[in-house]
Image (cartoon, rainbow, N blue to C red):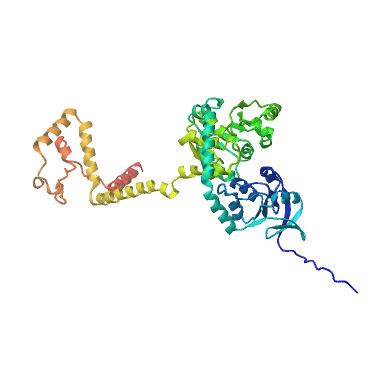
Amino acid sequence: MRLPTRQIPSVLPGIRGTLRSGRPTRALIPRLKEGDIAVIDHVDLDRSTALAIAAKGVIAVVNAQPMVSGRYPNRGPQTLADAGIELIDKIGEAGLEKLVDGRKARILDGEIFDGEQLLTSGRALDQESLESDLEDAKRGLSSHLELFTHNSSELLKREEEVLLHGNGVPPLDTPLAGRPVVVVADHPDLDRLLGDLKGFLREQRPAIIALGPAAKRLTKKQVRHAVLVLGPETDTYPEPKVLTSAAEVVLAPGGSASESATELLDRVGVQPKRFESSLAPEDAALLVAYTQHPSLVVGAGLSTTLTDFLEDQRPGLAGTYLTRLALGPTLIDASAVPAVRRREPRSRRLVLPVLAAVTALAIGIPAGVWAADHDLTEIGTGLGAGFGSGFGGDAGEGAAASTTSHHLGPERDEDRPADRRVAVRGGGRRCAPAGQAHRAAGRGPRPPRRGPEDGRRAHRQHQDGRR
């Protein structure tokens, strides 16, 4: 007799992918591929990291830590949820060890399987639970701000000379005084930000200061950077070709040991200028630009909002806040540049030419109607005769004619011969007859005006005479 066997469904429910795990998260991101399941150990996932993960096309993110710890309302989990990525958190250290990199896995309702074998489980985050966590985090924000304020005051005491007076900032050979400067940091939205700055870069030709990994992306975009600012972490450095292409390199170790960074740059043949301060490379780049007295500093990919500051978990966060206070109105964000330099629509640029054309028509049409109602030929001939008597004849004769005409006054119309009387329109002044200048000059009556027929008759007579 045949024993009954367990029937395994051909298709198990859930989503499937390859596990990709690693610490820290920024080291894992380059290895992620489309369809993978990212396994991270990251408390309070920030938006910048979430954007980089979502750009890789992963289907799920499994976190050993809570996505939202409650310290402040971090935006990373919401960014992943908006991208349609499934979220699981709080699997713990033990669960993290079971999710081996490269292993195939299936996710269903917060549980992670290998086939039918349960590997580990956590909390499945949906939109409702995520909104509840973020609302609780807003209530805990005040205590976090108190700590942030305390750290800022302590840092200001240590870095007063640098932040307030610029002492210790290395001078640059690249001239920046009076020029706009763009400080570019690596950011998931950097391509969009550079697209927004395309017109500004073309028109203003600002000096570019790039930070670490951003230099490589600028090179691909064919945007030449003048100054390169590097931190102590050599794994973020661009390739040697990019390092040597920069006009100047500034090394800002941020209070960390930088022997390995110095050795790497020496091998490449780059002699950096050192910025000895506990400030982060991002803040050092802003101060390097600001102490050269530029007309404007544009930050692309930098932290700009309070949540950005709180999400940035690197040491020296208070320095980021104080550096921006030091720059004041000189610093603007790249996202604001398109609104500031917004051009007028093309239709508005055509307004002035159209108005000029309409004005010309408004003046020209009435003038043409008036000319049609008046004999301008007689008026022009009379003017020409008057000029001819003044310049072609004797000077004294012209003067006598002018004086006689002035003393005698205009002739009355009834005293003139009938063929030389001028009609008066609308009670206006009478026009002087075309032959008056000839009589005043003693030359007798003006010869009759010749028309087109007279010209043709004279031409025929001339041709007959030649024959």
